Image: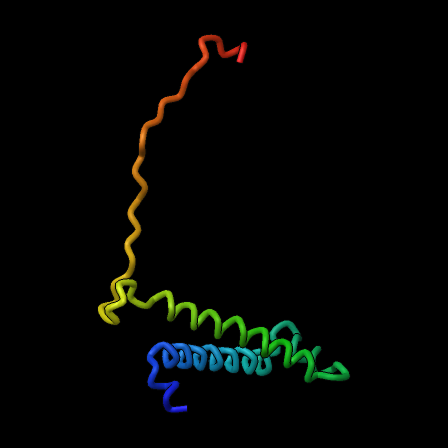
Amino acid sequence: MRTFFRNPLFRLLAINWLAGFVVTVLLVAGFYLTDIGGLWSLIMRSETPFVPIAMLFFGFLITFTSAAMGTAIMSMPSDGSGGGGRRLRIRAPELVPIRVKANANPRRG
C-alpha cells in the first residue's frame, strides 16, 4: 500500500477523493439535520429508508469526488515540469479573409 502513496498522481487523486467524500458526508448530514423541504422526514417514513439514503449518498459521492479529482487534474501544470502552476495558454484564432464570388443578379440565384 505504501508504494501507491509514493506515486504523486495517485496521492493527488486519493487526497481529492477524500475531500469529495468529506463534502458528501457533510451535505448528507446537513440534509438530515435541517430536513430541507421535508426530504429527510419523507425518507424516514418509508419502509426501507436505507435505499434512498444509500442512493442519495452514492449519487453525491460520485458527483463530488469526480468534481474534486477533475479539478485537481485540470489545475496541474501543462508543461510537465511539475511546478510553478503554469497553465496552457490558448491563443485567439486569426481572422483570414476569403474570397466569395457574388452573382450579378441576386434574384436569379
